[in-house]
Every structure is written in structure tokens, then in C-alpha cells.
Length: 449
Ligand code: EPZ
Image (tube, rainbow, N blue to C red; front, side, top):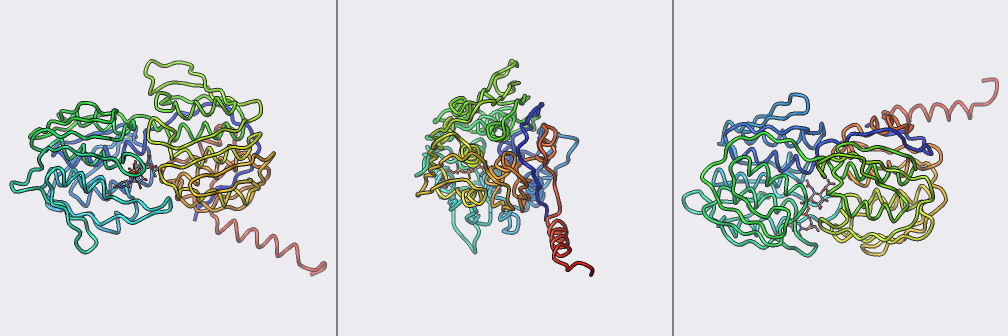
């Protein structure tokens, strides 16, 4: 199993181009189920989650092929509408296939996704939304089965998508996609406002859908009879950009980010400015594709952060900012309002010398002068990114195990960081362990043997 070996303490410098957004790519890929014409997406990152989604879509009759960073998806068969457990369990975003399938084929069967490392992740709001569009939804042998009303077509309705922790992102994507082919008008209230929803609505509009209001809490969709193919470039990944910003915050340095969606990162840049990290736009006419400079030379100041639905501070950057704040000059308070259990990185960071105290959804961080390298274990995608951020700033060697988690969402992040001057490499953890044991064994052999 791969691991990252990081020797920390080097400031970062150079330039990094931000890639296409994983969390835009996944729902946009499932939208290809809504048409029998090809849909091409550009700037699609080369990630394990994208490959998993391709595998799921292939099972559902949607072929895909890659040409560089372009991915073309083409639904060629519509007889298989069953998303099986062994694929769904690898990726919760599989739930996004449900709406498009039932809208286009009149029936869908998708294995019920379980919880995951970031906590319980129910899908009740997705199902409530589909019911509001007239679908009959049942649970059969661990599968969610959704059937359109008589005639095989969903019908428009009013749908409220709020839950205890705010609106649901993939739930909004699911209902938005399903409503494009429903009969009549659908109004989604308390829709997620994330930029990935805006990107999905833009693709669906290119395909012939009639959508107003994406990016605001009320979205109106007038259903159409059919959708066509389209060709679209994904928005850049705001979480990748924010992760590199957190890395500069922790390790210090001066980095230029190209293709940076600054417009979608205001909550993060607001906190960075507060922490003493300068984020300066250098150019670009599209606020979602800017060139900007991220710089920290002085001390890192503490901050209070509360994760919230967009445009609030994103939960997907919480772990990386907790890692950076562990080195701040004072006390920080970070509260997680989207996934209150998403704190698996805290115990690992403590093993590196971070001083943190967690109570419920809040972590109080007393900044320390330095973190000390240690072997640590990645547990989920963003927690792993937080551990890498800590490793870059720590004294000595950090080995982050199980980096397959990070490969789900970042394309060869170790190569990008190495280009910025970080001392980081991918190693085979088993070989490294055997090497270490051999060195230890040699050092305890008696002299003369
Ligand atoms: C998306 O997950 C992202 N995944 C997550 O990114 C991200 O953390 C999350 O949105 C929040 O921004 C993708 O886009 C593929 P939600 P999603 O439904 O849509 C509760 C990453 O690291 N809820 O918006 O599944 C839920 O428990 C991933 O890239 C219900 O109660 O998240 C949570 O508290 C991890 N019932 C809140 O809503 C439901 O039916 C928001 O979750 C659905 C959700």
C-alpha cells in the first residue's frame, strides 16, 4: 500500500495550476444518463473516484472514453438500471445516478449507500425529493427502488431540500437532474448553492434543460421532453485550491495558483487574511479562473472557523485549516456544522505534537511552536490532506499511510507539492517498513558478528 514520506520544514514556492473539480465532475458525469447523445467534459481530473464513476456508469449502459483531460460519456443501452452494492460502497456519489435513471428510464434500483469515515450520511432528503416528483420509492433487499408514476415520467412539484445541517449538495444535484425531464414545473426550495450545482445546471442547460436560479436557494425547472449532448469544461476545484493555500499557511512560502476559483473561496480567503496569509489576485477576467499569489512570511495568527453551506466556510477544507492552525501563535476554535463527526485527523495531529481538545463538533486548538514528524494514518480524503499539510510543516520525517484516500480527490498531489519545493515522495509502505526493520536489526547485532 502506498504512503507518502515527507521531510517537513521547507517553505513552498513556485506555481501550481488548479485542476477540474472532482465534486463537479461526478454529478456532471451522471447527467450523461439523461440523454442518448454524447456528453463531453473537459479538464476532468485523473482520480480514483472518476474511474469508479466510469465503472458504475458502464454497468448502467453509459460508455466513456478519455482523450487527455477530456472525458466523453455516451449512453448506448438503457436496459440495466441497477447500481450494485460493490460499486456504490466505493463511492457515495453513486447516489447521484438515482435521479437521472428514474427520470429517463422510469425506474432505478440503487444499493443503499452506508455511512462512511466522516460520519452518518443519510439519503432521506434525496428520497423525499424524488417522492415530491411523483416517484414511488421503496427499500427492497438493501436497494433503493424508485419508480416513476404511470406513463413512466416524473411530474414537476415543489420540493424542500433542507435538512438538520442545511441543504444537501448531491440531493440538490439529484432532484435538479431528475426534474429536467419531468412533466411540468419543479421548484426546489432551500437548494444547495455550491458552485458545483451551478456547473451542473450550466451543463444541463447546454443539453436543452430549462433552469432558473441555480446558485440561489430557489431553483425553478421547467421539464422538457428530451435532452441532447453537450461539451463543457469543468470549473476548477476550489477544495484543491484551498488545500494548497492551507499548505502555504502551514509551511510558509510564496506560491502562484493558476486557474484558481477565487470567487468560490471567499470564506477561506477571508480566514487566511485573518491568519496573516496574503491572497492577492494577479490577473484573469473570469473570477472562477484567476491567477493569484498566496504568501506567508510572518507568524501565523489564530482564527475562529465554523463550517457552513456555501458560501460559508467549506467542510471539505476544515481538516487542512485545523492542521495549519495547530501552528498558529495563539488559540483557535473550529466548529464543524456539516458533518459533526468529521474529526478523525485530530488524533493523528496530536501524535505530531498538536495541542487540541475536542468537545462535540468543536475543536479548540492551542497553537504550538512546531509539529514533529511521525508515522500517521490517513482515514478519509480531506483528513489525509490535513495530515499532508501538517507533514509539510513538521520537523523531521512524517510517513502518511493509506494515501489511497488522498488519491480519490487529488491527482498525484505529491508531484505537485514536490514541484513547489516540498520534500515529499510516494513510497511502498511495506518496503519502507521492511527496510526500517532491517536497519534496526543491524544496529542491535553484537560487534564482531
Ligand atoms: C457533498 O457530499 C460532497 N461530495 C462532500 O465532499 C462535501 O463534504 C459535502 O457535499 C458538503 O459540502 C460530493 O460532492 C461528491 P450533503 P453530499 O448531502 O452531497 C445531511 C469530499 O471530501 N444530509 O450536502 O453527500 C448530511 O448528513 C466529499 O470531496 C441529510 O441529513 O453532502 C450532512 O450533514 C466528502 N440527509 C448535510 O446534510 C440527506 O438525505 C450535508 O450533506 C442528505 C444529507
